Image 1 (cartoon, helix red, strand yellow):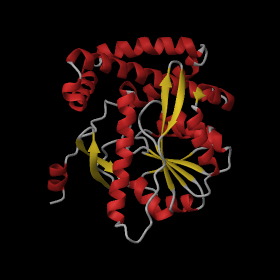
Image 2: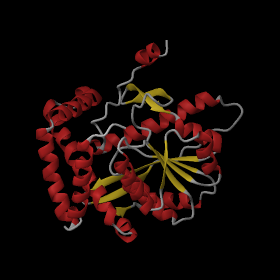
Image 3: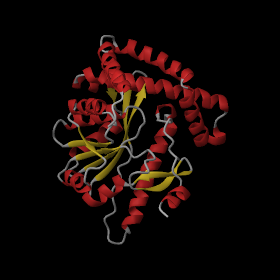
Image 4: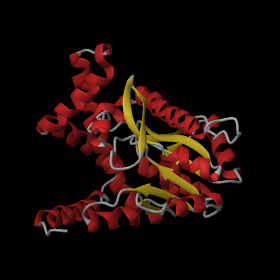
Length: 310
């Protein structure tokens, strides 16, 4: 990789920020994060325009321009809050993480069902709320009883990559990369392990299909469904949503792959991928300010994909 000095400058500024931020109470850090979020909304015109356009496309005639603008501002604020908590997570103990997360009686019951599940588990998460806290909390609840991994992209700058990998390892979670053999991941699931995936972005460099998202075709990885097909693992859509200064872990209905011979596997994979997409949409609609609207979820369209393969 070509040497770029500014990457090292940003990296060491980040490390300094991680040290300084942990000198203050969390309430002070979150207060400052809200101010920073509002400031970035005003300064980053290009990113602001992207968020406004994506929100306008998703909500069409449902929200007026002023409502879209206010929601876009909240997206920036929530991003700053999530980043602040990510930096604070470096110094949090297991007890701190547990205190930060609240569960309804229903979701606690689903946690217990997950903990007692004898087979593999595919956790389908989203860039909604705080997904790193989500994996940390679930791994803590497993308490070494189950091998826990997340599938992610190797970051372009290795010091950044090592930083996020070490953070996950602090809470018993290993990182596997997108180019990892499917057989290796399937074996982990067959052995009773848990794999976390974020299937809510348009990544045309990996295999996927088009399913509905906010009423439009969205290119979506079908990896969770294929892993469930090959390993007989259960798929658990779950989310870590900010509520005030704490978080609530929310678990949607479990999804099981229909292994009957009467069911076409490709159709089942499509149906499951659609269910996952609708689950993400359902929670994004409940908490729109907490999703990653800077990402162009509808970048790839069927006609473009078809032309690319001609």
